[in-house]
Image 1: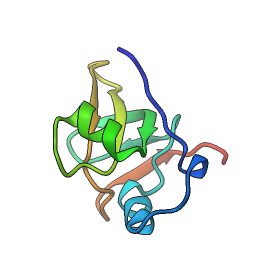
Image 2 (image 1 turned 90 degrees about the horizontal axis):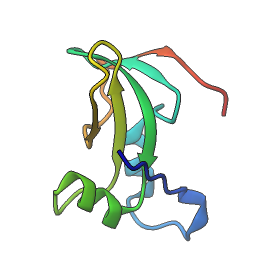
Image 3 (image 1 turned 45 degrees about the vertical axis):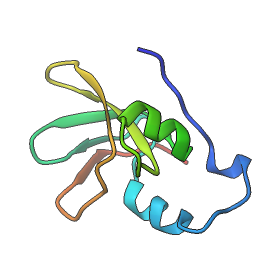
Image 4 (image 1 turned 120 degrees about the vertical axis):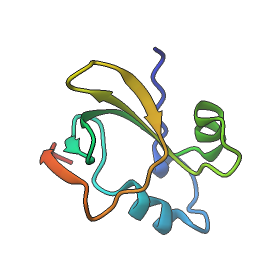
Length: 94
C-alpha cells in the first residue's frame, strides 16, 4: 500500500487548520493508540485536503490517517476525529 504524508509546515496556514490539528490530535507516525474497537499504529498522516479526499473518497475530508490494526495487520485510512475515549498507549518524540 502506498503511503502519503503531507507536512502542514510546507504551506501557508489556512482557515480551519487549528480545527484540523485538534481533530487529528496526538496521532503522528509511530504512535500506538486504542480507539475503542481496535489497537492501532499510525503509519502516516495526510494533511492535504485534496489527498485526504482522494484516499477516503469523501468530498469534505480535511485529513486522513493511515493506520494498521495491530491484531489483524490490516491497513486502512481513517478520517475519524480524535475523541476523549481514544487513548495513546505509545507516544513518539516530536
